[in-house]
Length: 204
Image (cartoon, rainbow, N blue to C red; front, side):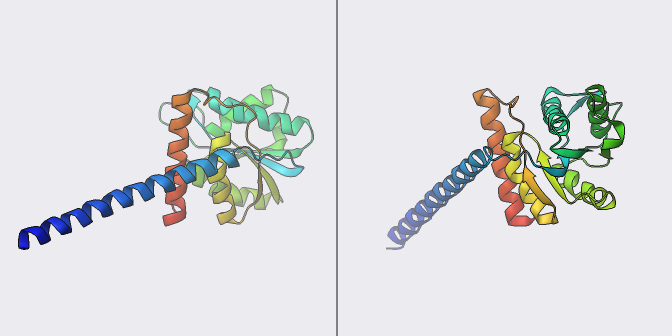
């Protein structure tokens, strides 16, 4: 009798574990679908400024992913959709320039006036990009912003902006370097994890 009872408990535990795994998988797929759908939202302003979220720098030049973001922001500026560009991102080991400074130099080379660029050079994460940029916005009278990043990054970035009380609209890059199946799926899965953690713990 005790043996049968033990087997019954084991079956219940296995079924519960399988059910939990299935539920978590469904939640993950739902979050990934949400991120993918949100990536299609886009605004071209007008706004006071565009915030360019930081990405890797190769010594002193923006990486291809970062250059896509900067290029989109510069195009918004040249079209008169924003008046200022807020470049974000600190100094990574081995680099000569902060992400923000590299973005500034690229923008100036492509026709943006230096006094139209604001720098946030201390951040290392998306959360910090926006949190550290907020007082810069306030000091410069910037109220409404467009957030510029990769399309699949946009859902989490906007969630962070809203948590911080930043009046923002998404303005993802029209093209993405994450085009291969593996790179796109990997980025999407990572964003689903970070967004879920953000909602559960507030750590974004």
